[in-house]
Image (cartoon, rainbow, N blue to C red; front, side, top):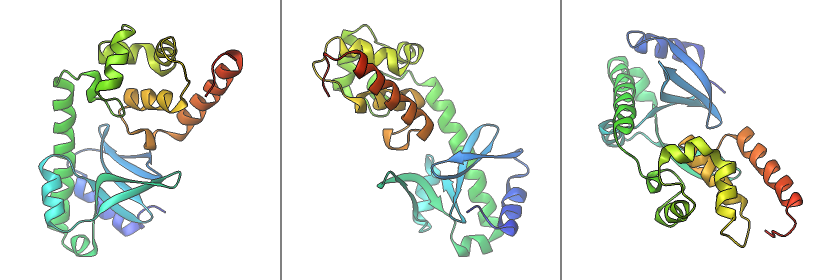
Length: 207
């Protein structure tokens, strides 16, 4: 369920100076974006603002509750904070919080692009997997993204005794920039089907 019409109108008015508001499916709800920057989510009629950088400190101090997304029955707490009733009534502060959510998210994206990431810094990876990737000739984030999850998984399998579809999904999440628990459903299903087919064709492997 999306926001009520009056509240969506209020939201649109509040961000009108920042740019045109767009919607897309996200975390079981509707993501709200301006110029490709995802700064809020609507889920079950509620609005959650993204808590990036200093905005998160402010949202916590205001008593805003975190968004908990359930993925296949697993609760995942995200850095989005619910706009409560008192904040809806305080239009000036609400608009300020919306702008902060957008501004700090945009700054975070820019900072991330400047920062030379190591493989271990990507979601789902870590030092142990980074070392395994080094052994198969994948030493940079760009290498991983260029190869893709399937080709990278096959390279790793040359040095592993057991198959592990969770590893394939973790690699895909790292490339997508998300925790494996919130990997897009369509991508998850496609990878699992591919892995099952690959197992049938390579009967020497056992999960």
